[in-house]
Amino acid sequence: MAEKKNKKSILQTLGESQVWKSIIRSGVPHTRRQRMHAILGSVFLHLHPARLPKHAVKVGYTWCMGGLSFFLFVNLTITGILLMFYYRPTVEYAYTDIIDLTEQVPLGIMRELHRWAAHAMVLVVWLHMLRVFMTGSYKPPREFNWGVGVLLMTMTMFLSFTGYLLPWDQLAIWAVTVGSNMARAHPFIGHEGPGASLLAIGDINLVHIGSDVRFALIGGRFVGEATLLRFYVIHCIAVPFIMMIFMAVHFWRIRKDGGISGPL
Amino acid sequence: MLETFKHTVDYLSSPTISFSILTVVTPILFPPTDWFDKINRKLGFYLLWTKTGCAVALSVITFFFAVGYMDKNFSVILMKGDNFPIVLMVYSIFFFTWLGMHKAYINDERLEKGLKPSEYNDPDDKVLVWPDLVYIEFIALILFTVFLVVWSILVAAPLEEPANPAATPNPSKAPWYFLGLQEMLVYYDPWIAGIVLPLFCIIGLMAIPYMDINKKGDGYYSFKERRVGIFIFMYGWIVLWLFLIVLGTFFRGPNWNFYGPFEYWDAHKVVALNNVNLSEYFWVKLLGTGLPENIILREIIGFITVGIYLFILPIILAKTWLKDMLEAYGPVRFVSLMLFGLVMLSLPLKMYFRWIFNLKYFIAIPEYFFNI
Image 1 (tube, each protein chain N blue to C red):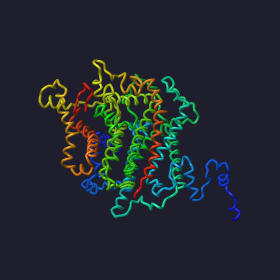
Image 2: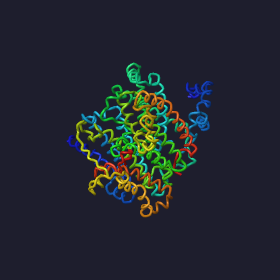
Image 3: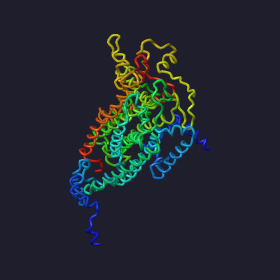
Image 4: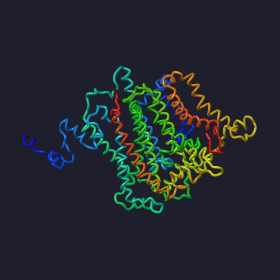
């Protein structure tokens, strides 16, 4: 028995090696102090506080939905980058690249992973909102962070919407046509919106089909080549970029507003 | 037997009936006042939030989808890859609403007895994030990854024929999470259904923490302490957003006509469209004269109606029925609450005016695309 105790497991030996300690900084944590250091000393884990009230780590309270939203965002970023290797956003190649992706790439479930994770993210974000509402966690001092969350939800849906166009099949262009047709009717800046015809100099309409907000969104009078490129850039670069900034604020404010909500 | 079930479901799913049922049931399920609470107790609606209630409801949902997957018409819709999230949505939204309400009822009882909510722990008694939270996150992450991988292997991502701008599919549908908005297009013009209402949704949601002055129920599940707020949220979210998505996905076929879930999508189904504007009701049907040339005069009744609804009604309410509320909330909060509340309520109101009176627009100025 005594011999066994002295023998170190592989994990322990690894955990005390110079390489491990240089990367993780703290070694395998054993004491309370070391465990707190494991959180505080890691750039990723220090998103969390070192200690939490008991209810905060219960799945029954948080439903894990906020964390899963973030996980899905990371997941979608990774699968999205892999998809970008194969995909060219032009009318000529987009559809055939998708076919290529499904039929030629080994173990090709990357598109499925990306699409289903995107649908799941919309749902998970909604459920996160339901949880935060049901626990009254938007109440002061967390009002602002709820607003940031609502904007993040809107961006999630917009990301999903722009991504819908990229396969360039019938499903894609008609869903986006239906969606972007709403922009025609934007008051004043859509050419079929109320008040648009009032914005005119003499007989010359300032807001027409070639200059309104829908034209700006889809880069043309109908969903075409320019729309595909525009949605590709919005989907892959623009919205994720803005979203990351909002997420940073969202996470930072959770901590600054007193950490996770709970009963007093 | 099964046929009778299918016919009943088809009949009940028509927007007029299903929407009315939900509108009546929601205030009883989430009673905002004592009066509704009494009905809830009498009819036993609260039993839905017990564990048995959950099991029964999940069985009913499962039975509905099981019959659906075996039905030759409904399975066509259900088997579309992009519609599977809606099946997930029905399950998960029900389950998590149930979970929230279940926990809220437990806490309500505890609070009534003078106890602290069940989430409460001694503030000095904290747990370490490493390992207590980190391993939960790790497990959740792995389970969800497994779920996504299995889903991805089993269901192929949909890919239809190459895009063809010359061939419009019938029906053309937006992505599923926007189908609520597309459904609103039946009742409102695009500038309201596509721009104004979504904008009010977003801004209204963001404004919730500033309009809700109820300090109770922060940081734990509860219902009784926040019943009015929860009722309004649930009506807007479940009935006006999620239900319209289900309606738009499962019950809308060619030409955006209504089809029961078990009904065949017959593109030649004839639906009478005889919608009449308020101005035509007033000038042509009531007064027997033609429509006046002057647009403002022609639509005067509509302007008065909308004006009374949006601007006079809050003033009347502030002086009579909601006098105490104005005092408690202050003028700015009161005005925004009224604005967001009345705009939200305008959707079901417009739907009922359409169904009962075939009313097309309150204000119809197609010359300037200004139709309400």
